[in-house]
Length: 307
Image (cartoon, rainbow, N blue to C red; front, side, top):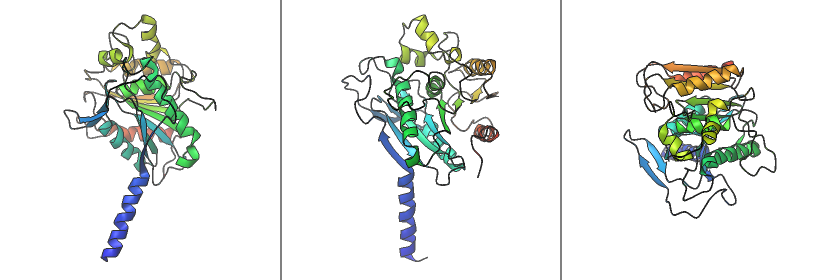
């Protein structure tokens, strides 16, 4: 092969990758609820070698643009997990983005702020503020991202699933400045082994304590128990969980699913016999992939058309 031609192809491929991935801050001005803080954001890897960030106080979003968009120009905001102590952007963020890109969906991976008493006021609403700001930003700039603002979903894993579930149940209250009155309601949600409830019998205590503190009032616990906040306006939701999840009991997804059905919201729940917690896209105990089922669900609900 001609060397000059090969170098040209490599340059174009690299340029395409750079265009497909872009990280930027979600706030142009002052970050709401922020206090002077000496925490320094640090990357790391968990026991399974998956990338995470700790001490996140400057929220950003990374755009993974679908090179061949679905006909609906659907997009999703992905909220990785991490117990509100870190943001696991590897297998619950970047890898997820690649899967969505393959079916024509542009992805925005949100590195949301982690709640710290020393770095912010009203720490319990800070992650939700960051999600709402990202929804607003993406919808306000939909044309530049070449997406349909009316086909924007949220995807959440573990504690990121709690964040996503608050996003689809608290959209009627703007926790950010929203002079343009941008619609903050996502059009659909996909939740994987999500933290849903603050009920002490089933909650993930680490996520609860990090977000709300160890002495949260009963009213605050109820307010952040997403299964209690579902209405008939909650968007369609797909859930996946494993029965043997010892970190976030499967009852979280079951209760949320029951609340959705009670309110006549289109919903689908897949429960694996085994798989534990934190498996990302790939349940190691099964040959099948839950993402294929989620894709079929999106097709059935006309969220995507399929290319």
